[in-house]
Image 1 (cartoon, helix red, strand yellow):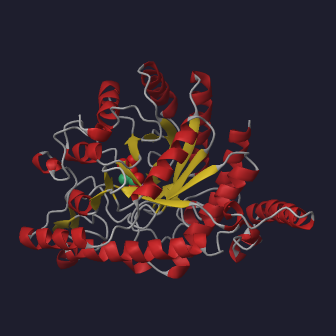
Image 2 (cartoon, rainbow, N blue to C red; image 1 turned 120 degrees about the vertical axis):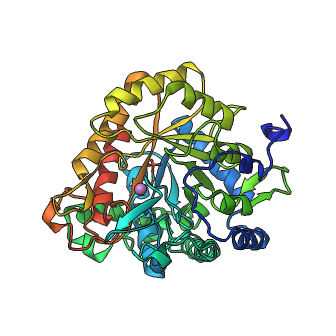
Image 3 (tube, helix red, strand yellow; image 1 turned 180 degrees about the vertical axis):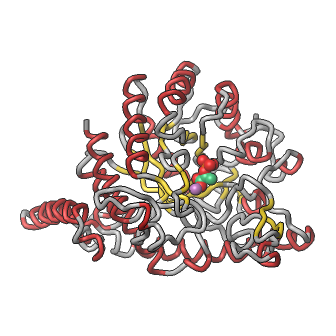
Length: 451
Ligand code: PEP
Ligand code: CO
């Protein structure tokens, strides 16, 4: 081991000698390498100090002193990298966080699936479209979703474009969260017009009014309400660390502690399909100091999970590892308790979080990939109850959501029905909760974390 527990054989390219699953098949390798060289010379998107700050906040969540809210699109799209889209996603996450903080009595660590969530794992390398075989869509950083052979051919220029889109998104997020938009004084303004008239919108409105009144009262009696805690929102970014060339190019050595940080986002997660102990993704992530998430689905093997955690976090540092379990409403009771016990028995410090989206997906009769609000809620409830039963701490949630008024998941207070899915089904990948469904989810979780 070298300093900071980095395995001594690790370099930011050591992953290249291992098998990397789920990579685009770049047709021109030289072009690809040229792009990586350019990317490596461009400024980082986040700074090591911010990454360390997030790790400290996640360590609080491990102890039950804070709660992680992670969410955003399944897959960001270049064409939807616009101010209104970024603003609406940020708004709904800020609203959910304030609900969890106020109604659930827990400080919330806010982490978006945003500013770099452009790479997707797929079940197959190619697919048949109108009888023609073509590469599967792997996210906007690799190819276009358009069903044309030329559009589907991976183009490394898209990595650069993804970097620039991420930078633009990051810039606006920083402006919004530091420049007054994220101030608690604006808590009422975050409610969207189309949500205001809904039951959830009204509940939010009532809560926001109470917060505004409390702030006014503090002002009246002379307590300062202009502290950064009230005027600024702390917001972090994350994405799946999938395309390793891009992540390598964004990895920089910090001048403060001499460690390597992947400066493409504050937090990175490793997908359920790429967490092989001897694979390239685990090798790469073992050497960067960011907080790491790991998805765990129903096909996990306990010993492998323990080995991967030990490999990624040999010093057993709190805040380094977040497990994001995704078993499905029907399977969580079978799969979560043995994992909770094994990790607890091994004495590993992890943050337990639940992704109630990915194992609750099904196709509606109309052919839309969807998820039912009830199943999502049911997996979450089980997640909390099973943790309490084992004496472990349910420390966070992971959602696919958007601030838009989309019709991608069924159910919720307005009982979105399967035949309404076609109305505003905008995702190119997995179905997301809309703004109203997201607020409803937050109110439900607030009840759970308060008890
Ligand atoms: C995702 O989060 O969009 C995803 C692909 O998840 P998983 O690795 O859990 O399947
Ligand atoms: Co997804």
